[in-house]
View 1 (spheres, rainbow, N blue to C red):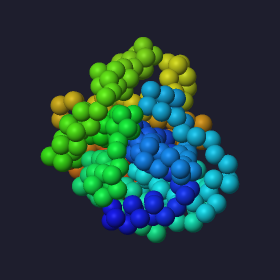
View 2: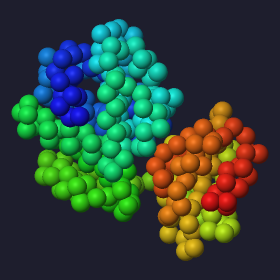
View 3: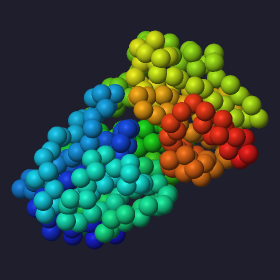
Length: 308
């Protein structure tokens, strides 16, 4: 699979890289990290990385704003995105050839090459694995900033190496990436420091979450977020806040924005991604996302969780 991808990268003079909407560190790590690797090793190629920027990830990097012309006769690579409707920048279909690189369950096997590894901790881990093959077969080298991004992606998607997705290979790759020249202490500060407003909202979560039969949940309305001066993306950073509650088997955050309510599901054991699929979403067995469109649907989600 690596060889097929490397051949396509060599074949095309123009490459556009995508990731999923509502990005997280792994989305940026895998997409922009791959962009930096290719830019470093193929300076003659025309390379782009696209997607709407999230200001909470300013410390990592920023994608580009690109024109339609960028997609003409281009190789398109989509990282860390299970379903086509979650690809940020739907112009991905305008390229000549499409590669999917992802670690989520392959429910939507789009692309001419589908490289999916559900055992990988993150898409960033997969990109580093691809780099190692490139280093061996094509004499690729890894710039420090790309190593920083891939390391951030792995750290983010493993919950600082605490999630079950963390494997021996994950730790080996992380250890190798640590050998590159970037400030890990500053990176961790950037990833996990929160504003006073977010910290106050975390206090609200602790005081107002509900738990029944091992299922926890909290509702964060748009008005509440405005009252705390916190954006939806910042509120989503708190989804792990209930992980340490004794007796908690799984939990849900309902976070409202302008047009929908984002549903963030997490679990310590019960497989929840099948529930997410029933509500316009999907994801990993123990960490998934979905979308509902009014507060009346909250009970439907919770009923599914209780039944599980």
